[in-house]
Image (spheres, rainbow, N blue to C red):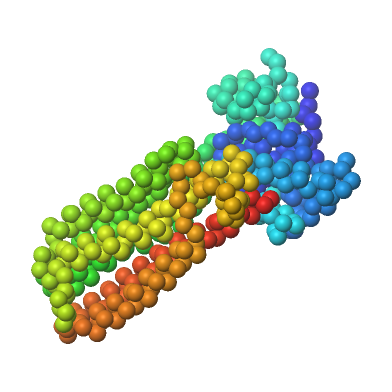
Length: 444
């Protein structure tokens, strides 16, 4: 029996769509995912117009022609789009917004689409006849991917027949289908290893760029401050400080990313101590590096100024526990935890509660075991910190005593200020934009 021809097959973001079978196949591992016909109709309407704005009326006419009014179909379109987007995020293993809602009036598909034309439908659904029976339909047995050992046995069993047919230039439809299956599975095996970007997307819940930048800037603050506190005695401490800087940076940056990754995992499991554990990890990492550097930093004043300056050890501890840690907790740890909690609530269907919370409506409750600090509040804190920093930096520079390393000290001080506020600004912008994106997701 020959397989039934499918009108078209689409491929995008590593996923192949077989519309006639209502089936997605992830190309990296061959795993199958079935979905509803209406979800298929909605997606196909968008796949025909990649990157274009598609109206509700266009979607209604192609996916819900039985409904005469576009307004009556809007609720079904939104719900179908939401479930389809969730399924696609599961398949591609990241939270990329494949189907974008534009000003609440249009939808747009934000991926490149390859049209494979008139091809035969997926082999696991084609009921090909073999000498010993039919190929089993794996999709109906838990939506698992092919067992490659079974496919290898099947391909060995057919190899002799293929050889004979190829030798006589008589390739039957059955042979072509089997060859296609083996080729696709071979390609899937080669693509099994996920990319580095895919791993990072999965590890940090789709926010790996933010985590990587923030953790790196946070680690650099510790390293630059180490150089700053011994700058006036560079001839004595400079070589050792340069050797210690990479280790300090790697320790702070890596422990920060571990803490954020741990919070991502515990948040998804609704661990009550997830936020506390992350804060403790930041404190422990900062405490360990500070205690270690106390063995190197001088216990006498190093920076030469007209006022009484602190010892190298005291100055470093003051920077870490009075400036860096509060900044990281307020601008990185707490907002990141809240965002993950809100996404988890949306994933389980609590869109209305999330929208009420973000709109600050009466009786709206904060997400469980999360702390909410509004972007406006953080912006106010950052503005006050910037004014204070300008005053203190001006006072410091105005009272420095001339020396061979005074210019190096001034440059390092400026770099530290830039890192400090660059870290805060990036976190604040990410926090605001992410909350706005969550709001748009709740309105869809």
